[in-house]
Image (cartoon, rainbow, N blue to C red; front, side, top):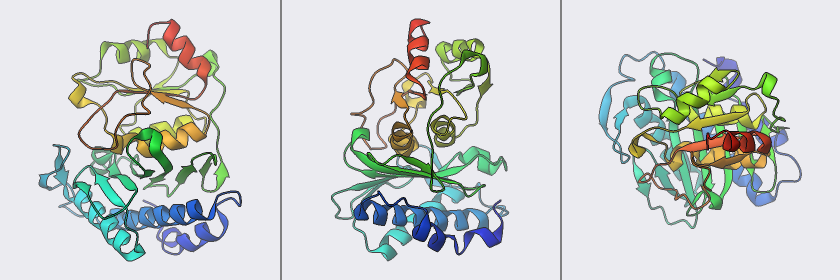
Length: 292
């Protein structure tokens, strides 16, 4: 877990110095709020880390998946911070579903992305926050915070992508050094398995937002999540923040068949496969070789 001395006073440091001057005042204020939400959830995450009840199933989420105690507490903290900040954003979250709060914009949340990793003490877990309207194309701001390292990725529409205040970019694709993230397992499609066999190096982290951040900052070349049936694929809550960050970092996000996800709605009701890439040359090669 992150060191105690790093987290508690960190918000002020971020707010004062880590948002570049070119970001508009409105976006700056919104990034500040998203950041404070992420820090608050990290505190909850650390507090429950050693609890024997953190994996207890306490209900069924709006998405149809079981809700563990760790998810419930994180989501409750998000609602608490939103009230304290005095913002009227609506909320879409995996556990509570859609919450109308009177706002013209919607906060799309995965309170704990990589829950199964967290419950097994694998340090691959984030909180994912996106602010926008209606669909992925309408997402204006995305923020992903690594709950173990305390690293924060964020982006605003047209303003670039950042990791702890430093600009990040995708990297040029080189077949000799490529690294691809692929979701594998019982429900993975044959296409996912073929891509895993074709790629030079493969990683599978079990945390969609973290894998897409790896592509955004040039640590990886692409990410594929494609399960069958469709109900085993990803929701907007999993990818909305990463969609904006990776797009601003120079990459692209489509579904597993190469179709645009711009109109994919920010709800918990629909699911999609995801193919994210850093360099268009990789996407073209994948298409030519029949992986898209």
